[in-house]
Image 1 (cartoon, rainbow, N blue to C red):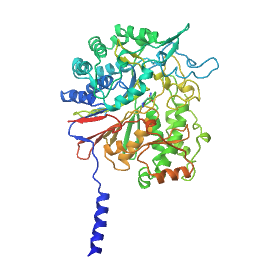
Image 2: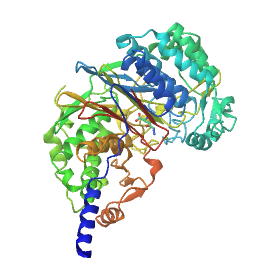
Image 3: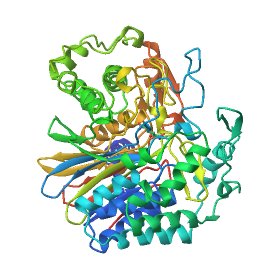
Image 4: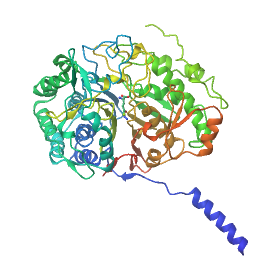
Length: 571
Ligand code: DON
């Protein structure tokens, strides 16, 4: 009797282990908006409920993030967007910042040719010409359907009413007050000057306080009334240039007047039965993702198991090779001939993986960017939108570092980016994400700095399947990759895929970075034993994935990253 009872117990426990109830995110019938803050998701979804499309919702959501999530949401930065319309048409918009016309290759170097610490990350000289406002008008003019007032007004209302400080926001602000409150100085040619102090951020904001943004509301109102000209030629432009120059920057009215976003062809490739549509240069995201996915495709990842030793090795080795190529070949396509066909050909990538072995790592010092025959010739935020008509938008927008250059204009109500640090200040010297670069990503006037942002849309059987992306600097590409594989190879729900522990490798430095929780000790021990250097620091994998998955029954699942205050809202 006891024996039979034990057998039944074993069978039951196995049954319940194998049938763990999946953790689903928010599931809805018609539409979904997933962003880093509830306030922004709400504004986006309300636009859709009013009958607006994904592009109307994009503009409202992007602006709402500038209010509700000043850490990264912005009108003083830039971004990238990949879209897929309900008829299957796809495209991409580049509203990335540009180097000012006065920028020079050596602008961050001292007389000995060494990089001056902080110059490309804090203060006026770190600021690239912002692209967000022009990007939003570009989207609206091409695809928008609602009157512009209906898009701007809820955002202006939010700025006036204010946004409640979350616990995580309190902690972030605490970390950055010293820099925002300008203990920084710059040399104006004659004397050392302090950056202007931002009154809004002199107060120590606590959880549950409400921060109101009347200056930002005023700027947004003027932009709504006068269009993008307000930001690039009008009163706002003049005040902005004055503010940047007073704080050591070199952006002029001409820089603003000349700024134009660009429609680009997205990177499109296949992985099994998936069609991946992702961002093209000047982001490295799509090309690196394509290289990595083509290098790992011949391996039976599913059989290795999620986050197993062999799985991690295959991904790390492919990432090593792709990031080495990134450092050398990728930059602004308007300034460089990018050998896209060559570095994404299956033959080149198979050759590149030839040295791979499960027993010994390839050392990054022994691995250079691949050689080809060229035939002639610490912040960002992502949001994903699917509307009730079947149009989808995947957009990643950034100030670069947390609160960008830390320069905040009290008069205009927003932070300015420090995107100039995404250029390679000096060949071989790492930027704030440890990424190195070469000539392709050197500073030139009017050039766009190389990005890792990877807004992505995926089709399966010609139908929309996923919409996803994330912030996280250099870890963006590897986080998007793991999220896709979590769903496709390991059958996770979007929420489980987003929640799953992540690791990252980027060629240099030659270490594999892990989130501190969620990895099996025996897996890590084995990797170390086999010669992989490991490093645990969740804060260095600052990705927060916002994903949408179309389920078999046609319903939509939104997965918002549990690592932040992120929120999926559907209807
Ligand atoms: O464009 C890029 O790749 C970077 N400026 C992104 C910065 C970022 O994701 C910061 N977030 N943690």
